[in-house]
Amino acid sequence: MRKALRQNGSRAAVARPDIIKAPTKGWSANSLPIQAEDGTAIVLDNWFPEATSIRPRKGYEEHVTGIGAEVQTLMPFVSGSTQKLFAAGNGAIYDVTSAGAVGAAVQSGLSSTKFSYVNFATIAGQYLYMVNGADPARHFDGTSWVQPSITGVSSSDLIAVTSHKARLFFVEKNSANIWYLPVDSIAGAATAFRVGAQLKRGGKIVGIGTWSVDSGDGLDDLFVLWSSKGEVLIYSGTNPGTDYAIVGRYTTGSPIGNRPLFPIGGDLAMISEDGVLALSTVMRYDRLTTKEKALSSRVVDEYLAMVKRYSDEFGWQLITLPKASMALLNIPGAGEAGAAVQFAYNVSTKAWARFTGWDAACWELFEGEIYFGTPGGSVCKAESSGTDNGTSIVARCLPAFSHMGTPGRTKHVKLIQPMLSTDLSDYSLGLACVVNFDIPGALGVGSPATAGIFTWDVSVWDGPDVWGGDAVYDGWESATGIGYVISPYSEVRIDATNAPDFDFSLIGWNVLHEPGGISFSA
Image 1 (cartoon, one colour):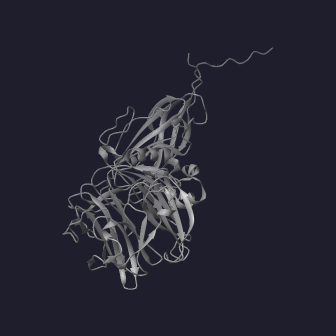
Image 2 (cartoon, rainbow, N blue to C red; image 1 turned 120 degrees about the vertical axis):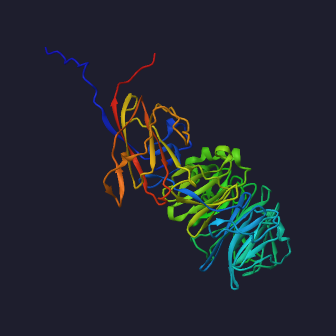
Image 3 (cartoon, rainbow, N blue to C red; image 1 turned 45 degrees about the horizontal axis):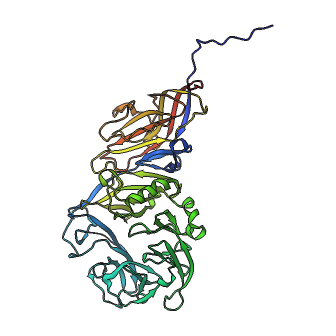
């Protein structure tokens, strides 16, 4: 009888490579690290997830300085080839179209600079129309600033303005009263449209907007009102005095901030205590289901934590940057030293990330670029620079932990190979092998704070120019660890003062590891 072959106890285990793909599904902020699904990230700060890779966000640069107090509103005026950007802060309005030190105020003596505004066209011309609930309404026509004569209601009591089917509509503060002007009018007798009897839960109107069924302006557009108690009223019709009719009444969480509605594509996004919702979703599902269907569903736990802590802070706002398929949700007070953070959303892939380092109080899109106003009195242009106003951009990523194809077995990681391409030389990269769901703390901007992370910033990245001039990095680096599950914690720091349009794509990591056995605790 043959004997069984005896195992060679001295035989060395063979290391093998495996792949962890970049977290293109975005930030996972709804679960414990052990529950994060493949393709997501537990930490995704200042990276933007795209279809096949992730990239560091671009930086910002100061556009205008010297306003002297928090910039609370940015407002564009667009009329043909005439385009201007105005900033409201420090009790005044300033023309900030051109870069540099701010000039003299174009409007001053204001009690509030928290404006609601709309660009409105009539047969007489184009107007930037604004109200703030404290000062008389005013508008700019490309040349002159005018306080229009409105009767029926004090224009100082109007807190929100929108245009709908060639009319201006306003919200009266602390009430359920809507006021509207005649068609193609910027002044004159305002008529009340009182909706208090339709609010089953009481409260006041705080949000007003248009929902476009076909993504454009037309007769099928619906008029949307949102109350402080979370009731949404939707009206159809062409004349509120004769044929407006309720076509929908829905319940959501209460609105957050004084700018809770924002059009995204053909939908209307809603910043609520339940999440960032699409109006089309609110119309299709009950409130218990909308959290799961919300735009913010993948980050709803972190979102709700932010709402609990910072919902009373000024500065909640949505903005989109169409050229990057990017939407930003500004959350005031949630960052270090009370600075703002942004939840970044890929409109195409529905993936989220978190941006830090942009302390924004308000946002606006102007000439295809996004700008933000700061608490310190500056206006900054974002996603447009190779640094954060001279400071390195720091992006951190901890992808979901991987079993590397062998659940329950120990892995001894030997080397990690980042798979990336870039046209930059002024950057550094740090790597650490993190094991067994042991989440590292945040790294400081100055130096790494977690053992095992190394950095370099010299010519180890040199390689053949491919893909339109980008260099592909294919070197293996030492980043060791032993555990059942592993994740390549990565930090990139970019200082590209002379390369604002830099390319940088990370598609994943090759991990060389030695499989081990199953260990049993005593």
